[in-house]
Length: 122
Image 1 (cartoon, one colour):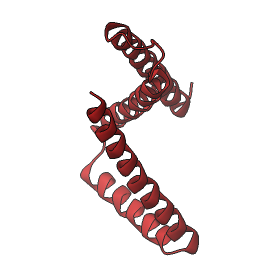
Image 2 (cartoon, rainbow, N blue to C red):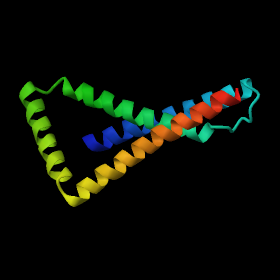
Image 3 (cartoon, rainbow, N blue to C red):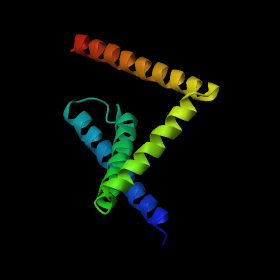
Image 4 (cartoon, rainbow, N blue to C red):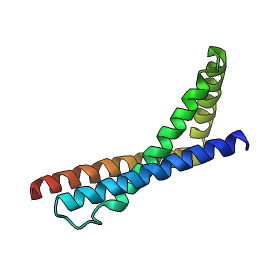
């Protein structure tokens, strides 16, 4: 099995485990709170899936990073920064940054409003 395939399997398994455990936790919390058992389960599963994938990827990356030298890290970071700057200077890069900023701000605003609404209902 190639390194990339092994990495994909590890991330996939951890993502699935994170999604399932978050879903079960949400169901149990709903039952305990006398809410419909399905309320917020998909959202919790999506968050758990993302967390599982990200944390598995970081874990694999950090375990491999211990074998790198400082020069390897610096050259990789310099290359990454140069690519990001070059991409951001293009018209498409600017559009992607603008959409990302809009989505981030919108998500924060919606999350804040939902939190206020939920707290006022309680």
